[in-house]
Amino acid sequence: MVSTGSILAFAAMSLLVIVVPGPSVLFVIGRALAHGRRTALETVLGNVVGSYALVTAVAWGLGALVETSAAVFTGVKLAGAVYLVYLGVQAFRHRRDMRVAAMEAPAGGQRGDLRTVLDGIFVGTTNPKGIVFFAAVLPQFVNHSAGHVPLQMMVLGLVPITIGLITDTLWGLGASAARSWFARSDRRLSMVGGAGGLAMIGLGVTVAATGRTD
Image (cartoon, rainbow, N blue to C red; front, side, top):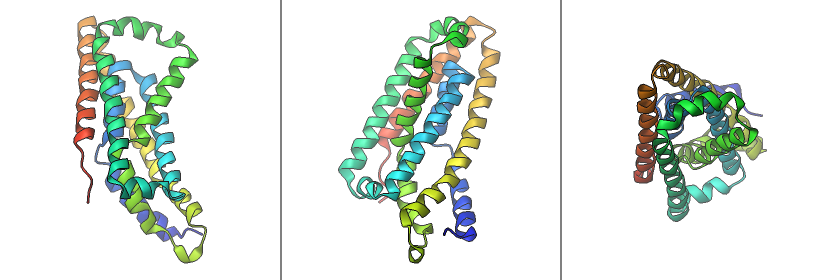
């Protein structure tokens, strides 16, 4: 149904877009610096689920509403921006508690893991870069004459999702590895936690200021 040529062309386009760090990548890095590897990987999982939710929305027509309506697009964008700022403020406020949090992380409850994944899902679904890419670019690689357009979109959508999963995981692992060095000192760990919080706050402000491509 979806030709190999379309998949390869869309993969190349997706790679070009994904290699430029956007809100999802910076969010993963910020979470890795503030909370460590486990939180970073759970955030990546949430981002992937949230991104594929965007693919599903576009495939079944909801993405067109977000892309064509300035009001809806702005509402979704600002919701994501406010949440990013909130998470950044929380990380910055609790930066001095990072040593305790790191020691208790292995014994953390399932609720904490689930909440982290849900954070990633929310940021993934409100990512302006993802909204524009899936709504504007994805439909261009669909063969309408072959029918089953929504299914084609959902299959094609797995391409950037897979690429993003790999690259975001590498970013998260890299950032968490750097955090491990800082963890040898309470002061350094506090500094990197504050940096991660400030990064998320800055990201939220950047997302809020992001305009529509049209």
